[in-house]
Image (cartoon, rainbow, N blue to C red; front, side):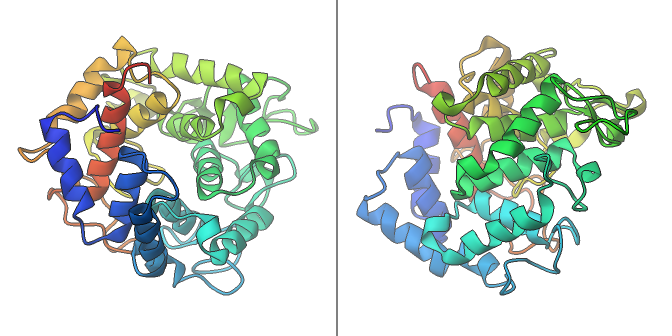
Length: 342
C-alpha cells in the first residue's frame, strides 16, 4: 500500500495524517495511501473537509447563482472570483458528488466562460483564450468531477491549439477557427511571451491532459501530449530555460514551491504533470526530482515558498514554514518516482 515510502516520506505522511485540517488528511489518504472510496476514515475526512474544512470555507463564499465575487466569466477580481475559487477548490480535493453547490458553480463557469469553439476565456469571447486559463479550467472541471463528455469541445480546442491542426493564423480574421492575440500559435505560443512558447501555460495544459484517462485520450490529444513532453524536455526542466520575453533569465518563481497554484507555475507542477502522464522515471526528470527532494526538512516536510496570503479565499500557512499543502504536492511526485512502473 505504501511501499514507496522512505524514512523521510514516512515522517511527512504521518504528519499529514495527524493534521487538524480534514482536507489534508483526506488528500493524504486518497492520494498517498490509495485508501478506497469506502474506507471509513477517508469517508469521514472527506465529509469533514466539505462541511467544516477549507473546502467548506470557500464554498461558503459562493453566491446563490454559482459564482464568486461578481457575475460574469469569473477571471476578475484576482484571486477571489469564480475561476480562482474553483481552481482552489479542485486543489483542495473538492468533489461535485459531495456538495451540490459545486455542480452549480461548474455549470455557471461553463455557461459564462466557455465559448462555442471550446475556448475558455477571460472575457466571454473566443479572443480571450489563453493556455494557462484553458489548461487550468479543463483540469479543474475534470478534477471536480464534471462530466468529461461536456468538456470534449474544450479538450479538442486545447489539443488543436498545441498541434496547430485545423487552426488558421491569428491574422486571418475571417477564418472560422483561428488563433488570437494571446493564444497566438501552436506549441504553447503566447502573445504575452512575445509570441514564444510559454512554459507556464504549457504546464497547465499538460496537467489537464493528464486528468483525461489514457483510454479516453483521442489521437489528437495523444499527439498534443507528445508535443508537450518534447517541449518540456527540450531543455533540462531543472534549469527552466524556456523562452522568456526579451531573453530575460527564467523567473525565480520556478524554484519557489507554493500553494495554491494559479497561473504562475513552479518546477513542482512541471514534475506533477509529467509524472501524471507516465514520465516519473524518465532520466531527463532526475535533476528536477533532486531539487524537490533537497527542499524537505529533517522531518521530511516541505516549506511554503510562494503564497497568495491575503489575496484569495483562505489562509494556507506561513511563508518559509513547513506546509502540509506543498508536502502533499511533493509526496505525490515522489510516490510516482519511487513506485516501479508508474
